[in-house]
Length: 398
Ligand SMILES: *Cc1c(COP(=O)(O)O)cnc(C)c1O
Image 1: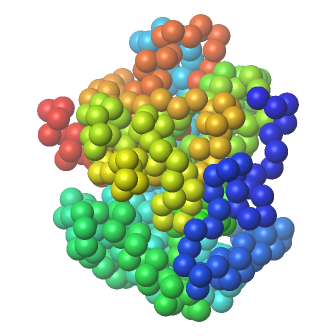
Image 2: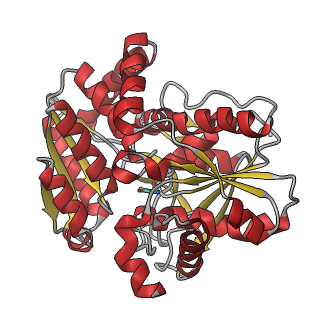
């Protein structure tokens, strides 16, 4: 690992060989304009002040850094702290990014917002900020996902969003993204597309990361206050990779802080039964970016599976591909069974129902903490709350 990591992405959105802008020609200029506008907003104190104020008063930041005392005692190893993103308005980290992007859209003079959603969490965060800013909101969602996530569909509609069912292909997230892209190609003049993870074409992976960096910035300050030193290890689940990038990024230049990203191992590493892109994935291009993805030998995107809809995607964010390639972040996976066991442990030991996505990070903590000395400190990102997963968890655990 180099002493100090280079600043990425470069001006064309590359994280080493990963990332970039693989979009239809009509979107190239709007995306370059977006990158410029974002750069200006980032340096404008008025933008930061408005964002910080809303993060505090509307979203509920800062979130606590909670010492999981009973769980730590039970495991008998490293001290475990949980970054409580589950306590945010709408129940997950996703609102950090949705809020940042709608402020940017407002600045750009856009009046209409589109998004796509799998589990519905990003759709809910987007519908929320659209209601708050009085903007028209259209959310594309696979018809199959709409059925599985009926509660989130209702939440979006109650806040005034239009939820459009996508019936093509598998009728899940990948098809919803295609539909949102199709909309945007024809509507970019008045419409901003709020991408929900650290994915897609430049500048999205960078912007989404930056809007979530507040997680790591707070965690760093909080652990210094509580323990007087930096953590030994950070752990986060990785779907597209936004909650993990948010936690990791402010610590990247601290060589003594180990970082572990946990992907969805599904039923185990069997083709089409998992979503762990670093386990047998390939380098390829999907929906705007060059990164590791799950595809067959012809380059066709493979089916994926995870008990948690939010981790069930064939591609990983390009910055994770980069951090893996330079050996700065380690990646592992947790299976459905391990995630469900961790869900139960956290529920009964700490009185916290974690989202099934976050439960993957917790499953790794459960494995690693007992192997580390008591003097070590782990910070694990509790990216969301498990209320949305109660039905599924009950099916397996009760
Ligand atoms: C969407 C979601 C994830 C996965 O997305 P990332 O971009 O990888 O963070 C993780 N946890 C929760 C609670 C989510 O809603």
